[in-house]
Structures are given as C-alpha cells and as structure tokens.
Amino acid sequence: MDFAFDARTEELRARLLAFMDEHVYPAEPVAEEQRAALASPWDTPAVVEELKAEARRQGLWNLFLPDEEYGAGLTNLQYAPLAEITGRSPQLAPTALNCAAPDTGNMEVLAQFGSPAQRKQWLEPLLAGEIRSAFAMTEPEVASSDATNIETRIDKAADGSGDYVVNGRKWYISGAMNPECRIFIVMGKTDPDGPDVRRQQSMVLVPRDAPGVRVRRAMRVYGYEDHSHGGHAEVVFEDVRVPAADLVGEEGGGFAIAQARLGPGRIHHCMRLIGMAERAIELMCRRAVSRTAFGRPLAAQGQVGAWIADARVTVEQVRLLVLKTAWLMDTVGNRGAHTEIQAIKIATPRAVVDIIDRAVQLHGAGGVSQDFPLAELWASARTLMLADGPDEVHQRSLARRELKRYAEQG
Ligand SMILES: Cc1cc2nc3c(=O)[nH]c(=O)nc-3n(C[C@H](O)[C@H](O)[C@H](O)COP(=O)(O)OP(=O)(O)OC[C@H]3O[C@@H](n4cnc5c(N)ncnc54)[C@H](O)[C@@H]3O)c2cc1C
Image 1 (tube, rainbow, N blue to C red):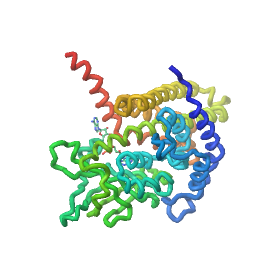
Image 2: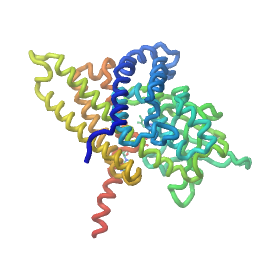
Image 3: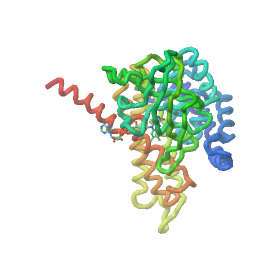
Image 4: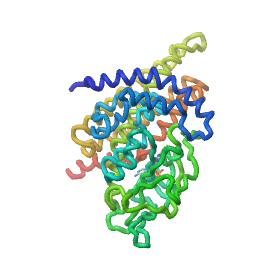
C-alpha cells in the first residue's frame, strides 16, 4: 500500500497551494468589501473574475472533470487532495478554479447524458466559466430525501407540438440567486402513474429566463444568505414550455441521472470539508498560542490541547477514508464504491462540524462573529448532514447492506 501522492498530484498541489497564498486568501476580504458595494449582493465581485482568469492562466481549471475531453483528466485520487485545498477557502477557491457545486455535478450530467446540441449550448459556456447553473430537485411540500416523492410535473403539451410543460415548486436550489446562473436542470415526473417508481422521473433543461420561471426568494442557512454560492433559492415553475430537445437523456431516466450525479458530488463535498477542518485547526492553533487568559496561553489551558489532538486524529481518519473511497471509485467505479461513498458522507460532515465547533469555542465571541470564517464554515459543514441526502438515509441503506449478508445466512 502506497500512501504517497503521484508526481502529477504533488506538482498540482504545490501550484495550488501557491495560488491560494498569493491570490485566494488575500482576495477574501476584498470580495467582502466589493460585494458590500455592489448594486445587488447576488452579483459577482470583480475580484472573483480576476481569480478565475488567473487560475485559468495557471492551468488550475476544471480539475474536477475526469473526462480528458472536457477537463483536466485527473482521477478521483488525484483530484481529492486538490479539492481539499480549495475547501480551505470554500467561498472563493472552488469558484476560482471552476470547480464549485452545483456546476460541477451539472457539467458532469451534461458531459455524460447531454445531446451534442445541449453540450454546445450549455456545457461549453459552463466549462469556460462564463455562466453558472443550478440543479432543481428538492421541493418544500414533500420529503425530498426520497426522490420518488417529487411532485413537479413535466407533461407533454396538449397541442401535439411535442413540447413539455413544467409545473412545480422547488426550494434550496443552490446558485439560483446569481444572475449568471442561466440554466436549471429540473427533475420532475413525466409518468407519475408508471408502475416503476424509479422510472416516473425525467430531467429537462430550463433556462432561467424562460417564461413562467420565477426565482421567488433566497432561503437562508442558519441566517446566512450565502451570497458567494449564489444563494439557495425558492423557484416556481408555472406552465414553463420546454422543447422536447431539452430533455436530458431519456424519458424516465431522471432518477438514474440523479443517482449518477450524486456519487462524485458527495466525494467532492467531503474533500472540501476536510480542507475546512484543516483551516479550523490552523485558526485554533494560532489563537491558542497567541491569546492569554489567567496568566497562561490558551494552548496551556484545560481541554485545549485535547481538542487540538482529537481534531488532528479525526481529520487524519476521515481523510484516509475519503482517499480510499476516491481510489475505489477509480478502480471499481462509482457503483462499486457505493458503501464507502455513503460512509464518507455520514462520517465527514459530522466530524468536521465537531472540529469547527471546538475552534469556534476557542475563539470566544470572535468564533461566532463575522471577523473569522468559523461561523460560516460551521453553518456550511452542518448543512452537509442534510444536503445530498441526510445522514439517516445513508445510514439506513448502509445498514441494510451490512445486515443483508447475515439475513442471507439465516
Ligand atoms: C444549503 C443547502 C443546499 C441545498 N442545495 C440543493 C440544490 O442545489 N438542489 C436541490 O435539489 N436540493 C438542495 N438541497 C436540499 C437537500 O438536498 C434536501 O434538504 C435533502 O435531500 C433532504 O430533503 P428534505 O429537506 O425534503 O428532508 P426530508 O426528506 O423531509 O427529511 C427530513 C429528515 O427526515 C429524516 N429521514 C428522512 N428519510 C429517512 C430515512 N429513510 N431514515 C431515517 N430518517 C429519515 C432525516 O433526519 C431527514 O433529515 C439543499 C439543502 C441545503 C440545506
């Protein structure tokens, strides 16, 4: 077993670390200042476009896409430590490298299932970082962790034109508040009464400016509007006309596409989460050695050393599991790595939330303030116990597979 990264990964890591130091961290306060001066907080600060241009110039672009035709052609194992580094500045770095969710998953869907015309119209500008996109599945009215519950309708138009008509309400649609988000991949039912509950759904491409699309409001995340991620919108689709050519894949294939989309998405989230934990540990250590209470540095007080040690142990544990999962995805495919993908999706957010929480505690009031990134990091990590499938859904399915072996033995 070899725990070293290969030469290409090490070379990209070194370049990315330098890019973070020279460009990304210094841009964090600049982006905040620029956003405050924008006409709308959903617009993109100029410094973000500058970062994108610089990352592209340096070849740190579309690193997430394993398909060499479109992206850097890295394996999951090569991309994992790079995504981790971007997680240290989750508001800026993934976008700067054109590696931000939900665009990454949407680009993968278009690359894998899109028609040549769809790829030309939407994938090319997404790969070039000229537009953003959103993925619209979750609905306020139904338990959406069970995708068979989705109620949005994608019906054939009554006029015989072959067009579809979309009606439904979605929420927590990440990125949709950003005016540069031009395209939604919408999941709905084309065959709500079909016998196979996993073949009732389809996906269609809906331009943000199509008549009948209403981006109603920004949902908050523990009070944050999450401007840098383009927010999480409530979107209403009312008699939205979609040409048949804008169906993604085949009718009835929506559920399978959603499954295919979520595998890589989940591991990317976990990689970035580990970077968030590393940032929290770094902040925790800096604070512990630089602040004094009751005559001694915080580092020498009570539980602080144990918090730091536990954080280091935990982050090493989840990193190993994430890297093993990346390796499995590369060697036996996403299906073969299903159990491990679920395991990391259960283990990583909760471990990282705990680490960030300790870092918040060590920072006192500063920890919950806007002057440190910790509060926002905590909120962001905490939502990943829900988003892309709540923990309990993964636990249920993982336990079922584990128990099956014993049930078969009788
Ligand atoms: C910040 C953020 C961003 C998001 N971005 C997007 C996006 O871009 N696009 C999109 O479509 N959606 C997005 N979501 C929605 C997210 O994917 C859903 O919230 C998630 O799938 C859960 O669906 P739900 O909210 O309807 O919860 P429900 O399905 O109502 O579940 C509620 C709770 O019930 C419990 N539960 C459910 N099923 C089981 C089970 N089988 N066993 C045990 N317990 C269970 C769990 O505790 C679960 O948390 C986002 C959510 C957040 C918070």
